[in-house]
Image (tube, helix red, strand yellow):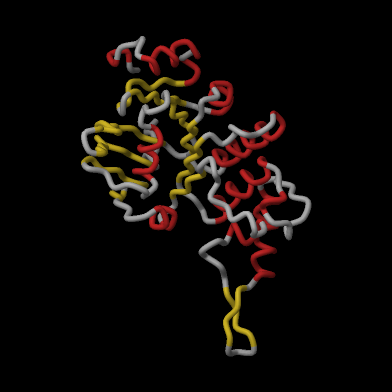
Length: 255
């Protein structure tokens, strides 16, 4: 059976900072509805790679395509408008605003008042936020609470709901469970599975091998800016992945 066209195709992507090559001719592909773990030690190039894909940096060479169309983003906002949502560890949420305002941040709907003045349609935002949170089985005690009053897991859930509402084609998650307790970790991983059921692929950056083995279909390992190995999660072990990360395995061992 013919495999579906990859959502994301990356070919020979390279990024240098002065004399340092942070990403060195990296190629990879991500298919609809799959979770791909992106592993590597600190300084392996993971963060730089996702910043190239999400519009923070421009590559020095190489290219990538989204749903078969070659892309080049000048900013993270441009990447978001094209369906690439990135959730960093700091979540990029405004802590003084509530869940609905964060979901619509930068894309607020407006309505005319007295036929003359435009104002933000907060009632519409509240209804839409409640609907998408309900669809994802996310429970927030009061949608009017500012984000700073929510738990870490609830904040992650709002960031994920924002991506779902705006029909993300690709979700990149950077250490999504790092600061969470065990129950909230489980909820976030359940939301990752929900995204996959909706056909949204996820790139999951994590140092938590348990999380990766719980939800990933494939794993890509980076070392010194290069893609040094890819494994199906069912055909690998933690020990093998650690060897790839630290250099105990050869690039010829890719499969």
